[in-house]
Amino acid sequence: LSAYYAEGSSWAGAECADVVYAGGSTLAGVAVGDEAPFPFRFACKTRLTGLFRTQLADGIMGLDKSPGSFWRQMHAAGVIADRKFSLCYSLEQWERKQRAGAMVFGGTDDRLHGTPMIYAEEDGPRDSGWYYVTINRIYLRVGGGESIASNHSRATVTEVKMERQFRPIIDSGTTITYLPSALKGAFVEAWSNIVGVTFSKARHFTAEEYKSLPTIIFQLAGSNTINVGHNSSSPGLASTLDPANGHDILVAFPPSRYLEFYDGYYAFALNFEPGLGVLGANFIAGHDVLFDIDNGQIGFAESRCDYQISGNGTAGDLPDDYERREHPFGYDGGGDRRRKSDVYSPVARRCGVPGWVRGGAVAVLIAAFRFKYSPV
Image 1 (cartoon, rainbow, N blue to C red):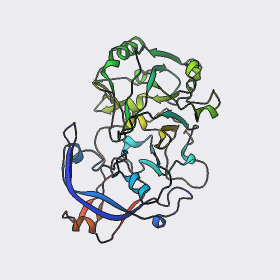
Image 2 (image 1 turned 135 degrees about the horizontal axis):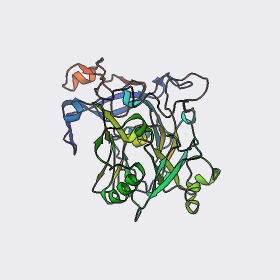
Image 3 (image 1 turned 60 degrees about the horizontal axis):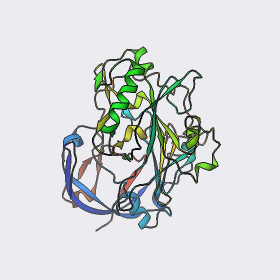
Image 4 (image 1 turned 120 degrees about the vertical axis):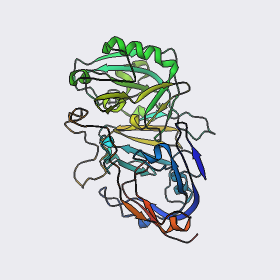
């Protein structure tokens, strides 16, 4: 088995089988995982190139709609009843902590939610493995914080003058966000008028300049069935900005997620490329995102995604310092705080790779993930 990626990374390995379960005792009320083991086929990697050798994530968990994806194998084995899973990427994920967030297979856990979950329509082709959404409008909001619910009455919102809708994919395996190049002219014009500087790949911002940067708000085509049950003023519904399409949803994309800090400069983790576009991991971050395949919808709820909680409160309660006072100033985002732990794998030995394999994080970190040995 092997795979090659557009930016130059690749891997190769041997296909193996084992018995696994996902889960753990870190979220209150979640049973420790032996109750639902299932047979699982995967690749034991023997070669890595490119970013797999330098970035925090040194593996990939497939979550698309193909039969070999992790959730599809769970569903085929009868471990989960519904074809659903949710990803919740922590707001602090760039700090390279082990608490990267939470995953739920078979649904979602509303204890993770800081705002009600609202739903975008997933309208990709039936034969596609990707998850598509439709961007109806884009806004730039100055002031009001990082949540979709503005915390300031004087926040101003400017619409980017789009000529048509766009249908990007949502892809957790793509680190940053790529918008279609057809959007660039209108976006850059609106940005320059508000910020007063040209939208460029990298630049220096003072603390005051950083605080004045706009939060980008995406209006996605909503689910007319499930969103009807929400009050029209619910955080995240588009009724306040676009009353004619009040069941559309709004997703906030603040500077702390579309900028990356390196050696005193900020690089935009938002690029423009030919094609449909990709809403990547930095777009997902700070939300619990439910991929509901059977019902053709994708849910969004703002969250800290804190998997390490007790029975008191919820993991979704937004912290008082939600505007990230400690970031970016005072934190050097450069450097890779990679974990160096080792995990023994008898399966890896039998698949022809060294018996000791690096226990690094994968593209989607499960808080507790265990492999159980069985002959194949």
